[in-house]
Amino acid sequence: MHLNLSELSPNQIYHTMIQTIIPRPIAWVLSENESGNFNLAPFSYFTAVASDPALLMFSIGKKLDKNEQKYNKDTLTNIQTRKDFVVHIAHAELVNELNASAANLPYGESELDSASLSTTPLDGFRLPRVTEVKIAFACSLYEIKEIGNAPMSLVFGEIHSAYICDSIIEQQESRNTINANDLNPLARLGGNDYASINQAFTVSRPK
Image 1: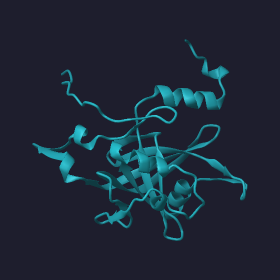
Image 2: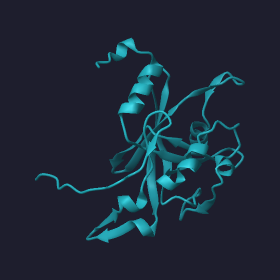
Image 3: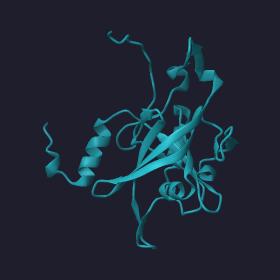
């Protein structure tokens, strides 16, 4: 089958992309609203983009707030206002909690409560991390770019520190090595499908 994207609707293109660009890592983003409550939401248009400075990026699609007649998304609003946030890497055992945090709740209500999750202080950072995760990045807003016809908001975050659970990290010479099988990170597929790592393997890069 050959698909000409110019003949497809934006919705058809979206579903084609999310079912073919797989697996995708998931940014589980904690942010804070003006009332001091925490918002927690997953985003699978997500990747690392630079190491000097350490930058990651995730994409937020805007949804129309019918009451205010403007585009609004809690995570984007919070980051624009507060400038800091925490990106978590969820493991497969947290799939139900992560999925629950994707629900559209009224602004100000916390997904942490609906997903029965707790928070723990993140050393040297204003915001906490989700207690149950094994990896969390303390980030500040680096830049937001608006792209596309929708449009989409590309949020670039600078990573200032990282929490990594001792059970998944090993020291090898001058590098910290993460055991991917022990982490068992959750990945996004198409539709309502997720995946976990069945087996990680090593292949030496050519010189």
